[in-house]
Length: 402
Image 1 (cartoon, rainbow, N blue to C red):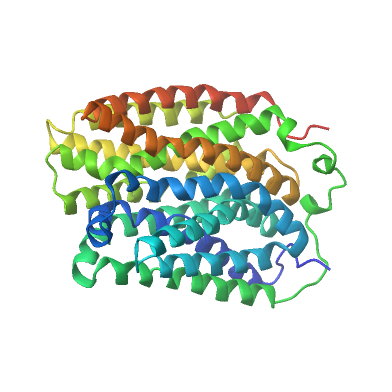
Image 2: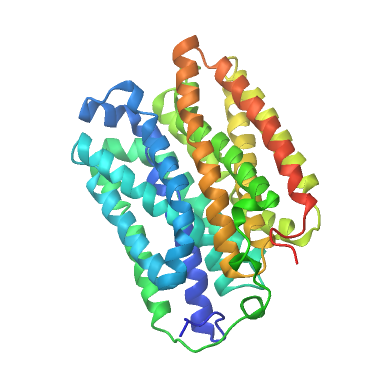
C-alpha cells in the first residue's frame, strides 16, 4: 500500500507544502554557510590551503555518486521514509563536523550524501504530492533554498565572531530536525490508496528503457552540471575574489548573501514561467546574458565597489534562474514520479560529477596564474557551453517518448 499521493484535506496540503519548503531550506544551507568562514576553519584545524576548495567539491562528488541510487530507495521504501532517513543523515553530518579535521571530513561526506538525496527527492516530492502544480511548488522549494542560502552565506562570518563558527554550524542542525518532524506528521496523516492522474498513467516506459540511453536526459544532465559548476565555483571563490579587490571579509560575506538574496522575489515566478511555455530558448538566452554581464562586472570589481554589487545582483539572478530551469525541467520532461526520480537521478549524477571539477579547476588556475582574471574567463567559456546545451532541451517533449 502506497502513501496517499494527493492531499485532499486542507491539513495535508499545508503539511505537504511545508515539507517541500523545509526540504528546500535544507538543500544548500550546510554548504553555503562555509565559504565566508573558510579562513576560520583553516585556522582552527591547521588545514592545508588546497583542501579549502574540497569543502565544496566533496559534496558535489557525493551528489554525483549517490543521485542514481535514490530511485531504488524510493521504489523499495517509499518517498517519505527515504526523506526522513536522509534528513537524519544530514543532521548527524552537520553536527559532527566541527570537532576536528577528521570529523570535518566525515561530516562533509555525510552532508554531501544527505543533500545528494534531497536534490533528487525535491522534484520527486513535487511530482508526488502536487503533480498538477509543478511550477508553483518547484518555486516554493527554490525560494526556500535561496532564502536559507542568503541568510547562511550573508551572516555566517558575522555570527561566527559572536558565538564561534562551531556553535553556529551546529545550530543549523535544527533545520533538518524540524523537517523530520513535519515529514513524520505527513506520513502519519493517512495512507489511503489515492493516486493522481500522473501516477495512474499506464504509460511507463522508464521500466523498459534505460534513462542513460535517452538523448534528452543527457541534455538535461549537461545543463544541470554546467549551471551547477558555475554556481559552486562562484559560491566557493567569490569571497576571495572580492577580498582580492580590496573588500574586507565581512563585506564579502554580505555580498555573497546579497547574491543569494536578490533572487528571492523571482524564485516563485520563474518556475511558473518555465512550466507555462512550450519552448525554453528565451529563458536560456536570458540566463546566459545575465551570467555574461555579471562575470564581466566582477572583472571590474577592483575599480569600483558598485561593480562588485552589480556582479552579485546579476550572478544571483542568473544562478537562481538556471537552477530553477534545471529542476523544473526534470518534472516537465517526465510523466510520472518514477520517471522524474529516474531522470533527476541520472541528470544530477552526471551533472554534479561535472560540477565537482569547477571549484578545483578555478583554484588550480588561480594558483597557476596568481590572479582571478583567468578564472573568470574560464567561467565565461562554461557559460557559453551551458547555453548551447540548454537549447537542446527543446528538441523533444519528453525524455521517454511514446
